[in-house]
Image (cartoon, rainbow, N blue to C red):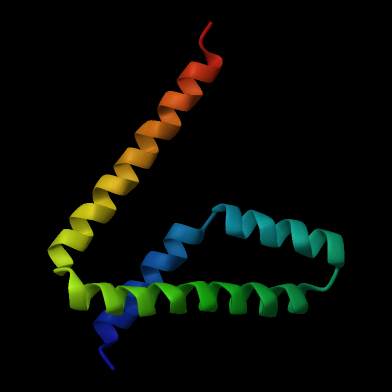
Length: 95
C-alpha cells in the first residue's frame, strides 16, 4: 500500500468534509433519531459507496483521457459552478 497516498486521501477528505452539508445532515439525523451508531454506520457506508464510485469512474476515465485533461476539466467545472452560483445569488439579491 502506498501510505503517502493513503494519508493524503484521508487528510483531504477529512478536511473537505468538516462543516460540509454531509456533516450537517449527520448532525440532523442523530438529533432526530437518537441512534448515533446507526447514523454513523449508515453515513460511513454512504460515503464509502460514493468514494467507490469515484474511484471506479476515475480508473475508467484515466484509461481513456489523460489525467492532466481530467484535472483541467475538473478544475474548470469546479470554477464554472462557483461562478454560476455566485451569478445566480447576485441576480437573486440585486434589485
